[in-house]
Length: 386
Image (cartoon, rainbow, N blue to C red; front, side, top):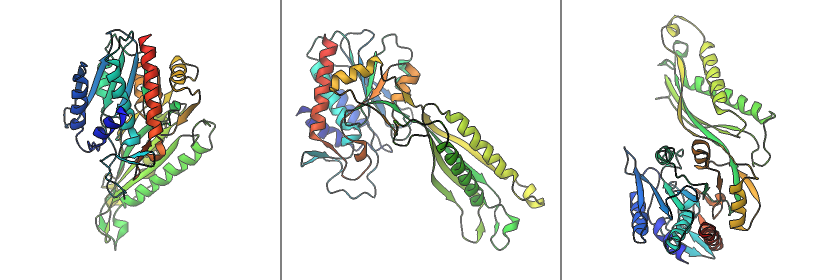
């Protein structure tokens, strides 16, 4: 299977988000160039990373965009039974970091590009390979910024995150925040002379948990999601320097994953209000009044939710390509919301493998999933040719 050979080369590039993806991008560029396909690169201005865009077929509006990210999550601390950056076949499964999330889809897309180059397409096939998706859908934005001015945009988009080739018409949005709590240092034998920033952070965590409980019991629910409501989560906390010092600083990182009807900006405003209330409630005396006790809330990154109508043309097309009319919604995020909201390109998420395998040791994609994805791509080429 040609897609397996391509996948083997893709996973050999250890494109962890903290590292460069240029080895993989150069392989893809050369792969396409050898088949007469010109690729356009969008280099990161501050890091050795790049997006890649290519079009196969006529320079006209329309066609299908196949989009996927090249970066993968780290393997640090995970116990693998095989080399995570060498494709290993066992019991009908292909094991490697990124096999499911989402280099399996990229391999099938490159195979489709190779076949498209030998056919006369009436509508173009577009490819978009991005970087830094795993850290907030950051890299693809430079490509999307450029596409916003195009007059010959794709008509539809498939983002190939692993869905077992079911058509996902929705996913949650995400807003990531950092909260910096600033208090006053003091000797731990006289804690009343300081302001404990860790306590301030704990108060803020309590406020976030109360908001989560309120949201979980609100009327804004979508049963198509495994978790049918917006979620708030604190994932990191750093603070203090020594046990005998009242900590002056503490830092939290938190996130909001919102269902489309919820406005994340309103939730952020509520958290800011909670932070101000915590500072106002600090006990007052002369030494505390002399300092600038505060909680600063800093946006880190965000991406929008996806909500594609189940009766839209792109969903009908995906059903025809996969032979499966089932639609789902997924709790994880993707670049699909950016294509949909920023460019108004009707978009679905559909790719080989299961998200249950993503980010874990011994990540794998099943051989039959790759074969089915290849069949989907062959059906797509028939549509673009007709």
